[in-house]
Length: 116
Length: 112
Image (cartoon, rainbow over all chains, first blue to last red; front, side):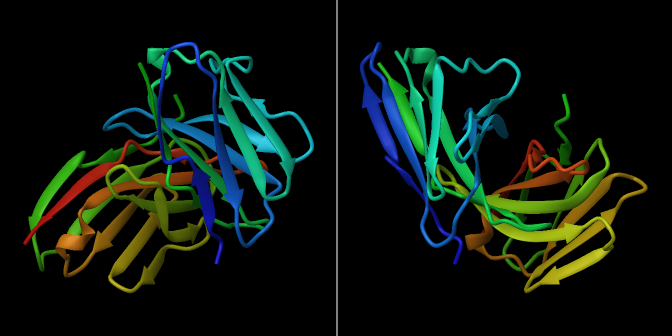
């Protein structure tokens, strides 16, 4: 149980394109999902906390107009990288948390984004 | 930065040997979690230890937690080549926050 699906797994696009990444909880409802960014050989950096039915909470230094997050249902959050540029190339990972105390987060398989 | 530290950054061992990874964190926690990441993939949850627990086992995994030292360790016994991956600790802070604070990770290589 507690499976999180992330799509697409890999995307290459031209500079200036907007790219949408989907994160779905397949067998549980997630009021909260998280979006991370990971550079090569580094740890995960939390970008934002996605809350169902309300605005996302962004970490310091993350541009909310650049990284649009929508969490319109209890099983789906989307991250849109708007007008992507080469510096936005990275590995993006989402996670979702089962409601309750001391529950682990369940991660998607990540999306490798390459902007040419 | 609130990010924790892990050591070693890289560890290379032979199959059958034990692997120990250490993690330190900075704030008071509700729990400490360990995750594994295979190259180019997402994270897989391994084990969660609560702040009032000192040791926890799951199969070949053993996790300890010392809240007085703000540190945790992950021991993998009888390692296998398939254990090759990066391992991250993540602290679940107190105060109602759901956000995890990840350590920098240990890259484990198990040689057959």
